[in-house]
Image (cartoon, rainbow, N blue to C red; front, side, top):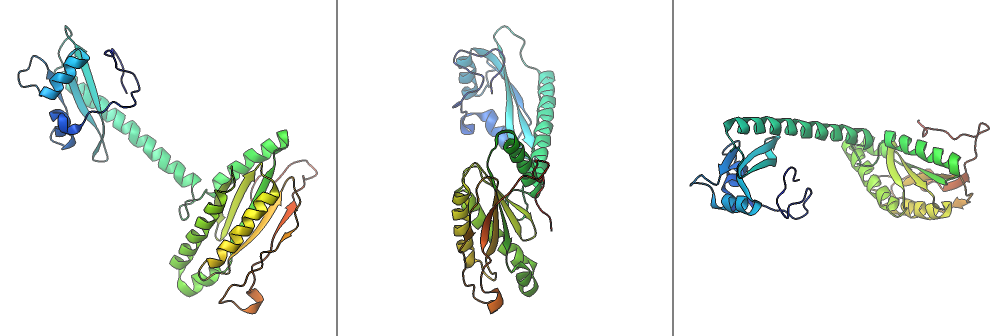
Length: 291
């Protein structure tokens, strides 16, 4: 980013302005951690030739550069110049620039910390899908838009069958692996549904929020998901339920045989779609179900 008295050809937000470290002695020293900044002047006979060429090209007399250090690494560089006839940079200017760089680094670190906290709030740490909070917030928005302009909403709830059995027989690490595999399959199917948000409600429950699409299209995707989930190791696949604000669809024939289970649990439950009617007060639930 360039600011201040720009030279001809310089722009505030250049797209392809590159300064190879190997060509600039001062940048190389910064990159190697040899010093914490320096200043140069065309009147100095020992000036780095590459720096002299740059100053001449910019129509400047002197320059100052200090690193922006973040977590022990150089995140960026503050580079300042002054024109001919202006005061040359001094140690006092260098100290001031270092203070500015430290403040910039602190701001960047705070922003990164805030982003990490937001990721923890909006992403499920185990699967990388949306968190329950993110799902609730999205559902709030969709319900408002449905009430205001009759926007269609389809909700899919999925349970991973057999998670408790996997946890009991193989340990929670195996159970977590099973959940991550299920999440990957759900993510693939969610990618086929424009506007879909896929997330984990908690435990073995997942959810997809799908706006605008016909329920039949969502049902077809859920059918593929249930069939895909039969390959989940050590589990009896997924049980899925679908509800729509607009469309009413019959049962989905997703009966599949899952090896390793007693006969009474040898089929994955059918996923069904039903119309989700407005309550007498004309409002929908604002939170997804908890168990």
